[in-house]
Image (cartoon, rainbow, N blue to C red; front, top):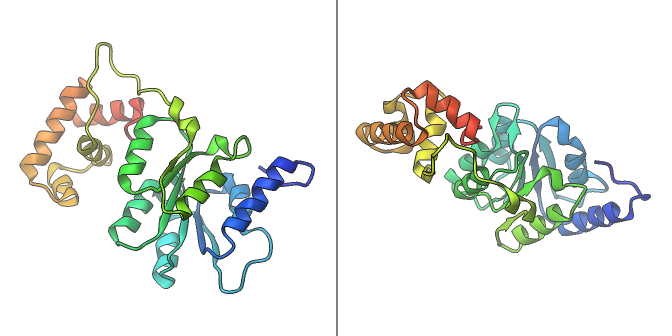
Length: 231
């Protein structure tokens, strides 16, 4: 996406975005394919003492936040060079810092939206909306007002397709467990990360297998990816 004068609507959105962020430090953690979006946040003369930083990984983002506490507006892509953008938001929320977090989703999937909000995202925007709608500008405006925003385009997201006859959805806790299962974690490792008993982790895994109608952890991970529960 490029911002040129011959596209007056895009230019107007760009100008409004710059106005909204004139006094706000912005940290963009995003992969190069959305570099134009990053440049939209960085373009133009930067106000004195106001940071505009672009990184491509969680590790880089956390290093910046460690050096300069902020508070920042974080604009995070769904996929980073070293993992999921949601992991960065979880880490930021876990540190208790007063940053505001906006997540850009590549996939229009209601499970992802629910997980993003549960992880602490203040706004969720579909990256396909950038250049087509003013969702990004609206999201920034609402986030800076202390509100939550979900891109209206995400309202059309359909439920993940399941096996024939499957009607049960995974709970938020089961989604967390399935994410860890998909990464190869044992029940004990899941228990440690989620601060629950190993027997509770085991019970969650068994319930996930039942709900997904599979018999093994590997099959659960594959089915989770297929249905959009893992990313």
